[in-house]
Length: 483
Image 1 (tube, rainbow, N blue to C red):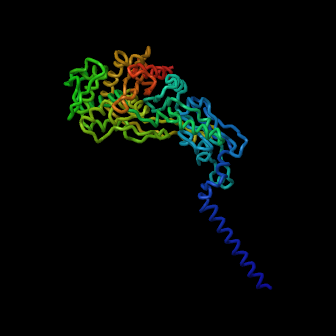
Image 2: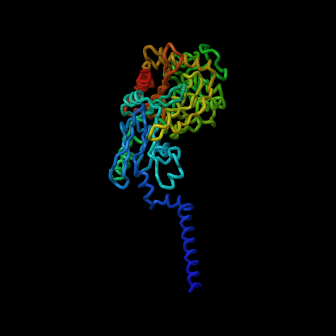
Image 3: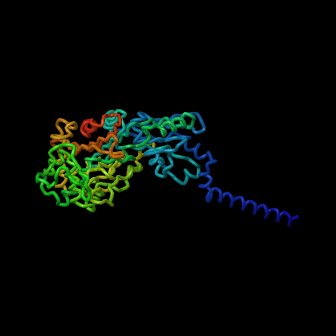
């Protein structure tokens, strides 16, 4: 009898040990697999069991949460959704997250370890801290000015603060309301299909994810290469460039949109935006120097705000004729509006480029700071003397050239217009570009730099111009920042 009890007890002990081993296997070694299993609804239920943290613009929350009463309880809500969609992105129970909602998901969902006072204890009792707050660098007045300026036309605006790198505005038009995608019902699926199937692509973030041929705005980069390399030493010295200019190794002749470009100096060529002069300068500088200068401005580099930004490109495998076209912002040269805002910002900041950032700080639900947004080191792109020369050139474009629509009383404004050809045989409606910066005349401190691109497919081809279409938008954005 005693022997039988012992055998039963030993067998029971083995069964208990096997049960414990299996529990450890499931809870520790295979927990991630079970959590990620699509059939497991518990993570989703836990994720939406509490309100999501807030995204803040100008001290005011632009996101919130609504109690739906369903199993996935709290849905995302947006204030001025179309206005801030290029910044916030969407947070959908069906389609996931994008932009800041994705980049800062840990803070907003309450899963970031920085929000937990006692991480191991919280994990043991399965307690999730309340979602935190993400404070952005965006200036609401500048954001609204850019949004109203585009007025639904296809295009984008990016504005940055030159000294700090703070992103002041990011607008993509046409936009959409991310609140339409928040829940999980049929209306959300219908909205997703409608938005993704729309011909004007409202969910495309044109400020960060779309690259365009920068056209004549890229002449700022070419002028930098010519001045830094010593190819041009005097802004007013005549350059031996005919009009038209025959592209090297071809019989193709490159002309100009205006008269007076033959054998003139860099100052006048910049004001008139002479294609022939800058194409010739690009060839004279050479591919290696042009590519190196473009790289200093950020072309070819990956960038995060913390949302990823599409890389701007300057081809490094070009023949002389292709290099000539690339030097005037055509051929394969392509840039995001944010990249061209960085070009203007570098000139305004005496040749120093401060990488842009969008997140000022992140806090817990009680306002205690737990971190800041990623900040890149400032780098010297050009000599301060070169930057001052470019400031002169850009100021003259606004005061005496095609950028006069961006002039602001009481302030010094520098700018560069651009009209970028595209499409088969350049038959597409040209893109209108304008990049600019502004500062108080009594101070050398630049307040903001901005880049505007307008696709404007409904406009007449002859009416497209950087100064006429994009210049007034840039002026409105800069003026809003100055106020």
